[in-house]
Image (cartoon, rainbow over all chains, first blue to last red; front, side, top):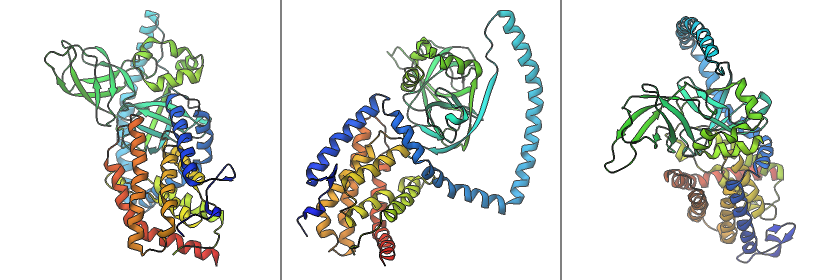
Length: 312
Length: 161
């Protein structure tokens, strides 16, 4: 049994070859494919097509969790009723606040009109379920159950109840993939809510931490400051909470402050998220105008580079 | 024991799909790193049992499917699967003549090779990997291997009869 009979040898392209040669060929091909996939988006179409094929597997993996959820609902009527009551109260509270908001929004619109500035307040939302927080948690991606057939497009911002989560980077017909703000390749243009100071929040690869690498030593920033999206770059909608400053360190001799912040959104816990976009944004996106936006390229995000290519 | 008879492609695909689903089912964060590499074990099992029909190329394709579901660089898992299968082909001759304990000890380094390829590609691609996610599955998969192989054998035998 030690030697391989001719019949046992692996086949490459229909011909029997020695396994040693076969593995070398496969290794070379694999490394080539990986490099191509990592450095360009030429293989995205292949990936999209194949991801439709394997979609049923993804959906099957959802069943156990969903079945547990249903069972839980079935057996916990009491909890469900209690939750319903709580939600009712919360809804009432939010409705109350919303009434004030409607008036404020109208006022804001009027003032904006007086200033002759573009109004981008009209925002559409789409609820998406998070199919999988990438199985390897150090990769800061989530997969969503809405795709291009639902009107999802590359560059759409993803938020949850507490703040900005990320943006869509890949769209296939039935699902899409979004990069989270905690990914090292992603930067969010933010402003410090207290002072209005503009800067960029960069991901670190850990879902509990962002850094603000571009704040000069004399910048006015304190622990506890809320960072809201500034809307510069046109990628993320303005004025959504992004993170809260957790530490400010002066490095003696350094030019910049060492500032870390914790995202307000629950990046690794949520089950559902909102895709938000303004009608204005989508039309500018299809023109492919965003690639030229200076603030956008300043975030130096890979995702942005990709989608600039996609839309053109 | 080795399954000598030809097993249908449908059965192989079915077991692969089921193990792939097991890889994707969401687990609580505490347990998740311990998830055994079900899919890899199934690929190795068929590569050992049905070498005429399940060779390096099949293993590579199986890995690519995983890459699509995991959104990793295309053919990262493909390469790892092919390398592991190659190692398995090399030891296949004696694998099935051994008692279960030694079989399992032979599978462990193959799984290490598999995880090492992933670890290496992650490093080259600049992805920050928590090491526990790479070596904990080796332990859990090794412990599970006897039971998993036994289960697959029974399924295969059931179909052959």
